[in-house]
Image 1 (tube, rainbow, N blue to C red):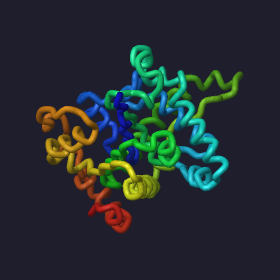
Image 2 (cartoon, rainbow, N blue to C red):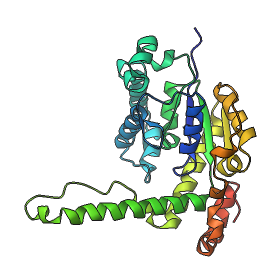
Image 3 (cartoon, one colour):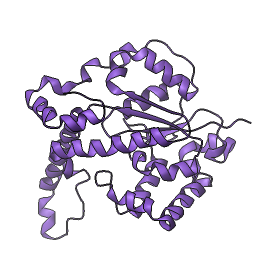
Image 4 (tube, rainbow, N blue to C red):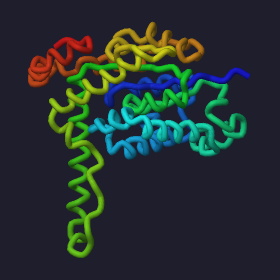
Length: 283
């Protein structure tokens, strides 16, 4: 019985990983029995990455603790062992679902094309590599200013909704403590911080692509939007999926380099031209 090699999707948040995951899912890549709506992120892998970040005293937007964890051999061995154990345990029913679990009993025995998408795997990949040494890595990049602006817009939207909920319940806090916390990143409210975070993620993802001994494939979000068919053909072949029909009607070309329609964002790009150029992007 030939087991399938997992497809591990990495890349910065807001870089097109969700669109990529959706396209691959529709083409037959199994991404989990239960996934987060709109993002195709399996709760199983989300929870495990949550745990790894907590062990490192890190978060997706303040990831420095991960480097400290990876540098500590005893700590990283322990975390990697837990991941290796979990993906072979009965808990994989959370990812596979009852029917597939009855057939495979472990992720390492799956025979159909499968994988997962969680941008934070960009940070935790060295640990996952020990669980799946033969995995295949897909990395998608997007212009840093578009990423940072998208993070900024999402933050403002979530903050506005959070404050609205607070005001609606404000009288309750005369008698009880407020226990909820803002579940978003205040760091990315400043677009410069968003670009800095983008730089961190792309640098780490490129290090994976450059050093990983297994198969890797990297492409630009903007190239996929401009001419989707040849890139999707490569992606499907890479994932072991059958060729499909035209993809032009599935993508929105207007999302590529959206910052160029805003003079203020163009000015931001000029201020960060060196960082952008490091990853192959122009103003």
